Length: 88
Length: 418
Image (cartoon, rainbow over all chains, first blue to last red; front, side):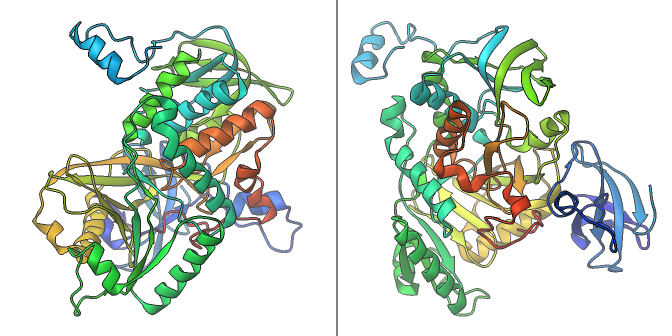
């Protein structure tokens, strides 16, 4: 079981969280010419790194805040957790 | 190659079975090949076999980082089916069913194909309507499908929970009688033995470290056992696709996730069908050894760990016990995990790429094992002819760009949602 330290609530079990995917994916900016490739990269294409991976989780059964988690996808070790508006 | 037959079995009995030929040789990499297949799992081995058999291309190497059939080929729950609604999936899978039926004879290797039937349970009127629609689509594509009502299901699987006060009562189910299971390792070994006999080099313990690409063309592959010159490379690495894509500076519409499975202690024959729970994600069958083989949801976050976490297992088995309460009395024998190449619409990719000579086979999600023969057959065609076959036209890499998605389950791009 993963233990995720919510930056708002502290250490909690994985059961309280739901996953939100790669946190480095950026939605193309509005009011700008956007190519199909840019949309593809936002919607479909993923690096899915082996090793350190910055990802979104939601503390669904807790404070319901979205947070960022830096986790190793090979060992499941969690290095760091951040509030959603913080950058690593 | 020695044929496996009753006569050879008797003949070899006289020498105490000490003089059988090796099923395949332990090859060392040559400097140059016509085609290199990366990944010595089911799909890679099948691809090499059909390259040799159907296209007469035998100067082929299979490069495998670990051991033959040691990835998802050795970790799946052996289910074979073609109960798809969309034409591209249905026709591809049904072509595969034909190959499965002939496989033991074709490979001269008993893969223990057991067409015992699969039942997808429905738990509401709405779900029965959806299954009727899927069943009709299947029948239009020449696939057998039978819509069962509650009583008919009860006759086939009386051990399921048919009491009235359950959260998800069984309303009926959709059965594909010709679906079934096979001995997964035998499939890998059968393909390996035949491919080897036709001249394919199976190179294990050989990791790909990089690619030699220039002018938009593949020229070779760098491995832990030396560089290999080659004009055509087939990528067949399932859960490791993203790792190799990174070495090729490609980002692909695939995420790597963890899927667990488990077996109970062996028990006497109780279940002669594959059964899936319709109100969640759980499937079960009984192996020839008597173990109940079960699986369900992804662990739900990107992972390369090949081992799972207990919360998901608990969740999946709760569904199992809701469906068949007797399971709660059984002891768990083993649990394990494999890494899935989850594509963004739930359907696979078998296609050429923007790099000349590089062919991609990935995105098999939960359903890689059953696709082994059809995947190998169409991928071999795509590599040999340098164009996709009609059967894998729908599995293009460009569909994510053009919008021609094959979203069989209607789940969208959130691959971790099960």
